Image (cartoon, rainbow, N blue to C red):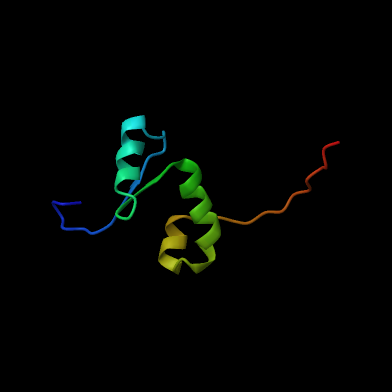
Length: 72
């Protein structure tokens, strides 16, 4: 972040983070965020409808519905 003079950063890792990386991100709470695969997918699903058409063309998703059986 310092090299590009960014005030905030988002580090995304599909495989998770080391304990050291998590500690450093906590120490820099207001400037650095860590997203794992679940965070990334949650954000995509939440905001997909707001994406512009060009981005949707790069990441074509279709919403489907399914029944969820209640567990006893």
